[in-house]
Length: 484
Image (cartoon, one colour):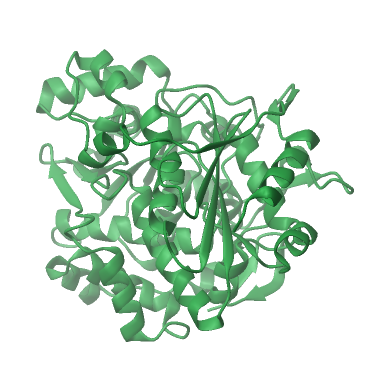
């Protein structure tokens, strides 16, 4: 299978190249052609009922990677990445219709562990083959940074630089990056997630900087959901849920709390592979650019809005480029010719098939007070504690039922993306009960932190904070001073 840039479909590469480079030189994202997406059979869907998570992951991912990673090697990678003693996956049945898929029991108690563990092992596999080194640059709105840092920590061929918004992640999320040390370098950025993401993308594209600092134009790669190696494993989630929920090949409705849209895009691909899905719920917080686009056909990037679901404070999701491409459209960010900085984000110069997108997807914005209401409702009705991101999914369920009452016959699964113990203050505010803090987080609370900073201010524009030239300069200077 070949993958192209969403900005240039003639720019074809294999999976290894996509993993090692992170993103194309033209600022697009690597994507597969819709007609090339492999299919699962009904027999394979039935067989998944007797498989564990790693086995289901192999069945799905082998279809994409069979010509690049030998079968035995891929099985070893997935058995290691998804060892049930390290990262168990559980489906909780709340009632006959509503289920929760807990993707939150891995090393950093976040769903990001699934994709990060696969990416880390695949990246190291290719680097060992090629006798190469890579510096992985990642931006995080909360959970990605800790998951990627954990997955890459102490790998021989990899260094990891993480950019996080200094004011909008929890102390528990921060310590999952800042206490690891060794080959993990965590930078607190004076800005929001979109600024962090723009900085990561800028460094990914600056081949001259990589050459000057590392002597290798391709040294810098990505582990954000812009990475193809993060996208592919996210296709597995809904297949696992289906294997544990569905009977008689019935359709299900995945309900996905969404920030940078990686989970949602993976689920869209799973549907295209043949997974019986009635419709996909894309639930966002008060950063409501996508539901407004779906409703109006007009996409406008606004200033990001703070929310209890901190990992979803994303006003311009990267994976929207893949989604719009999937439905036949094209979106890009306009950049300054000299500095390469984004000067206008989210320009759609070819509209996707809006009718098909509206048929397949339902999106709703959940306001901040409803986060707490969602946590309380689930606790009162089912004696189950969820956290703010899962609460966005829960509240979206009511909105979906109101819009599509005919679909209440279908089972629905909410992706619960984090352990409630990562957000103890928010949970306690909602239900006056403080959740248990997970063991690894308790241990990290007593460890010394190592934090680098990008102190230069972002550019404050009408459409929100933007990456500034002084931030780029400061980041390059401080990365150049690191001793890899």
